[in-house]
Image (cartoon, rainbow, N blue to C red):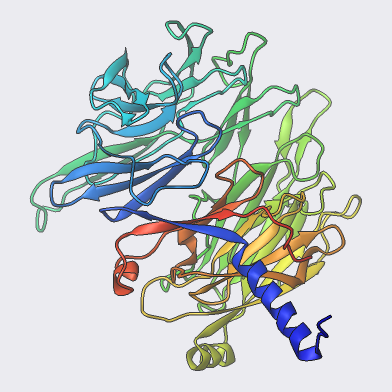
Length: 520
């Protein structure tokens, strides 16, 4: 019988930890010929696993393309199953099920109507088919850009795709029926928002110019009136309009509710809240509309950034306006916030999830403190200190002034120029029902802070995985790709990052391994 020495036992434990770290994910490299400008993950061939479409612009031929990668049982291929050239007249695209052909069609607004390409085992057919002659605000393409928008989706939860078409005079929804040959037209007075401009200076201008920019408002599909049916909510800068779902699955022609808003500009969806050197005032943003306190009424989350006192260390806060309803059934929001969350430091991201599974939404806000000392440390150590602060909503008291939990995160950067930010994703990576934090220690190591029932998020329990990472952490996203209820990771890179390492252009996909090595 072999006797284990203390040194041998420690070596064995170290080997177990390293094995567990490397087993967190299985890595796949997807090679792509061009600079990736957009990534779309969706189950296109109806096999239960999400496939990937990497969109890029072929500058040599001035063509817009995407590389298609079908996910198989053993992961993703290195080279695409198909490289598809997008139509010249494509203005806006989506994927959806609008015909009897298998899988999802590629659907787009083109010149004079809506068109689609069918899917086969080898990829999408090159020849488009016309779906319908109809006008929209998406009239002309911009061949220097590729725009995706979720306009083909099941709006009324009947199991069939519907098509949302913004027009200059209102909106048309094509409601899917049992037979793909029939579509019910549903007209809404939901109009686009517009911005006009004109200028002419006889001293400096070539000539007079005028124009208008039309765009759909921010749209949400949520149950507004607590009848267990999703409604359509249009959010403009000055008002919120709701179009309630009717018993037949259609939506009201006119807005059922129009609620005034005064919460500043609507946040455009950028992940990180950045300040600019020319900021000299306070800016307010409408951030989110969701049910915070679990009363089935939607609430408003707004955020403000003030550089009145300091450009380097701006003051930030998050305000919550709870939705209310009068005895007569009128919905409204109070002028003053019901709760204010003011973290210690400048907030960078606002994540809203039910972290402790109590039916109420909580806030996890990473912050940074910038001063002379921290700047010197940053330059000397090439590292930045962040603090993720967790604010849990209490049943009676709402939110406390101090965060219930703080997690210190230090990230090292190469500072080669360009945007630098940590990887910061919130998802369930081990299917235990609790959110975890994915972040980075440097540009070569991922960190996972595990969530659990006792700690909510355990600051001492970490998983690690080594792989080349981008300097800009917003290029990394977490999503469940293979339907195992464990989040996976897509890693995109800056220009020439992979070339600098001697690799071809592309991205990495990390599929979460099923194993019992999750550290708790």
